[in-house]
Amino acid sequence: MSKKTVLITSNLYRPNIGGIENSLFFIAQEYIKNNYHVDIVVTDINNTSNEKLPYYELEKSGVNIYRYDSSSVIRRVVNGIKIYYKLLKKYKYDIVISRSHVPVVLCYMAGMRNIKYLLAGVNFEQNSIKNSLVRSSKIRQYLSFYIHHYLQFIAVRLAYKNFVFSKNMLKQMKQYLKIESNIELCKPGVDSKIFNLVSKSERRELREKYGFTENDIILLGVGRFYPVKGFKYAIESMIDLPKNVKLLLVGGGEEKVLYEKIIKENNLSEQVKIIGPVSNTNLYYKISDIYVLSSTHETLGQTVLEALVSGLPICAFSPSLTNILTSTNEITDESNCTYANELSSKALAEAILSSINKLNSNYYDREKISKEAMQKFNWSVLIEKLS
Image (cartoon, rainbow, N blue to C red; front, side):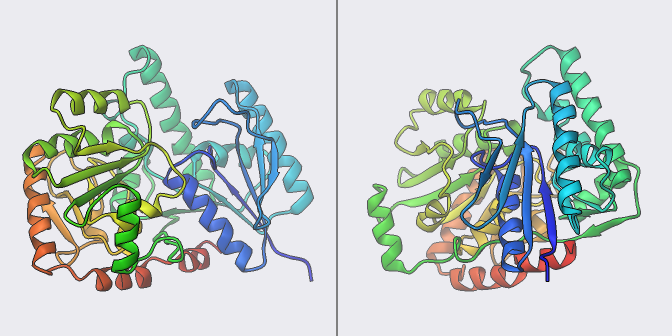
């Protein structure tokens, strides 16, 4: 009996680092467990180094990775359609899953019709001008923004079915993409073999390895260094926190220069550490005490799920605040989260202090936080939905 086949596609994959890239990996691994033939198709863009990524490679698990030249818009379109068409003729995929709108359109143009679009976000809100870095002229910025908005508008209509991770995204799809049907709500998973609550002795050893003591309170933030992630608030909050409170920022991006400036101007080099992009983020969850979600916009928050499974309580801006569009309240409650009730670094510092006090008084049950998150967020459940 021949294997069933699945194509998983997006713009980027490993070695690029991010929530979408991670989701491609874990979705692929889950399908491998279920005896599927799995292909991943992405562009050849490498945001981590100048290394030229191969057009084909085979992962140890058996996942085939295909990349195509996207050095120009024309090449991206032509090469994308070519590789999708070639693979479709060979495998006649049972399932096609896309995490981005451009591949949805290209897959459709290549002849695929059973495309399931798992939205990473609604472009009109997530990548709006107010949430973007000004890297080019306003004309080019607006042009790019509206092109991608209309491509996503088309993609949700070409897809066989659309999937979103939160009620917030459902609302945004209705508001900005003018679509109300053919949408299903689902939740991502977390690999509990990678992200988990470690023993006190293992945690102590890891802390010593990374140069921290038992008296240090370690805050963690993971993600791209981009305005909507709000890491600026997290760094500035350290001004009002005790010296034994340390903030670790794991990630990379264009705001790194800004973060380094804030750290230097406020003499925070002993309290704030920029780790940079790494593949083993799970180690930083294991040594931390609290996860700080400083985002002003988050479709759900894969890193929040990873933190919860690792037994970390969350500290975040309240989703009820103006200019805050997150779904934290859909995955947390008062047993595992403390909210800042104002969009400011001072309010975030106060919420962090409150969270630290809860930790010290044993209000937070880390084992319970981890166990409940493992039960709720499972990749196999998502695979059942997508299949």
